[in-house]
Amino acid sequence: MSKPRKPRQPSPARSDDGAAPASTQRAEQPPFNVAGRLWLSVDEVAFLGEERIALLEQIDQCGSITRAAKSAGVSYKAAWDAVDAMNNLAPAPVVATATGGRGGGGARLTDAGRRLIAAYRSIAAEYQRFLAGVNAVLGEAGGMPGDSDSALELLRRLALRTSARNQFVGRITAVTARTVDAEVTLALAGGERITASVTNESVELLGLKPGGRVWALVKAVGVDVLAAASPAPPPRRSNALCGRVERILRGDGPAEVVIALGSGVTVRGVTTDDHLAELGIREQGEACAVFPASSVIIGVD
Image (cartoon, rainbow, N blue to C red; front, top):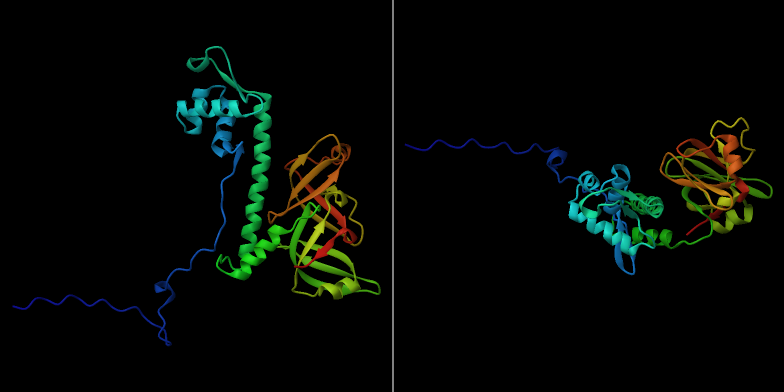
């Protein structure tokens, strides 16, 4: 008696040109992405990273090494080892313990510890912006690390060093020539528009034309900061980039205001504390960075 035949599996359907349907083709590889972890070192010894910062924040919140270790997801011994290492390497102790030592009592952050957390968070934010900028370059170039043109473009952007705190990359959407000068309008990655005023000679020498990719540099001291709902509109031929106030850096002089646009790009402006107070501008609020077209410097690779 013969064995029954095993049913034959139908072959995948093919299109008229013989190609397999999209579902049977190899899935598209995800774009190349640059990632990293931030560690601060002292004399080449790892000193501070995200895990230790999280532990310090839990100590500040819980007031106890035991509870902080549990909340941070580390062992009691590991928490103490980390605290000892930070206290030994930091210029001043970052954690102080109450009477009772390791076996009892409480723990609190010192002023140095709180300053350390604030400094780390600021550095970490800049580091993430750096990674985002690298990945934005790769995204524009197709995200292929093996592409020599992409690698060259990435190196060019990272190698640019200038005193201008505001550095934007965009594509020219319009060039409007006048008798003496011209207005060059460019679009940033998030769709924001910047207008620069340049001489007609510069338009010719730099080869500025719609579709070209250019740099736009603006010094922070030339950027004014206004409330998002300011009753006074920006003057003619001025740029206004509005977004959320990410942070305000204060010192013994003017304050620097960092505004995050919807695309994640940031713009910096410098103003006085009195001006900020008068307009009610504060961190996490809305504000606009305003600067004239004449203050924008256009560059090409």
